[in-house]
Image (cartoon, rainbow, N blue to C red):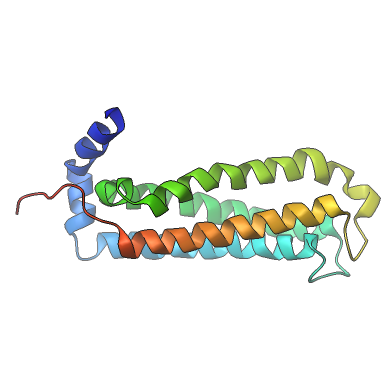
Length: 171
């Protein structure tokens, strides 16, 4: 009930009302969110495909990660900040949508996968950096990452189209 009260309070804030009722603010925020998603996940997917040995087989993993990771981080920051504004604009919609809740549960798993990659797998990159097909651990991390991000994107779009309004603000 505490979270529901927080959602209701947030729904009534001037920023939420502005984002929700403005003809421009919410669509622009959503567009920025999608651009951040394209930059972040787009670059992450290239790294994942390299880890799985499906593309750029002649490129060293360190080179691919080194070139693309800064873009992925930048895109993620844009996506995260704009996502917060999207949530602020329609907190009741998102709170009441199962797809959004599942998406939020999967995001920490995607982050954990990145941590696992950097702490456990990437530290051994010197042993297999130039191999076209990486050890199973590298391939698995790439597959898990790509799968999580595809599911997160689908759930995000599902949320956008099927969210129900929990609170109705009188006009």
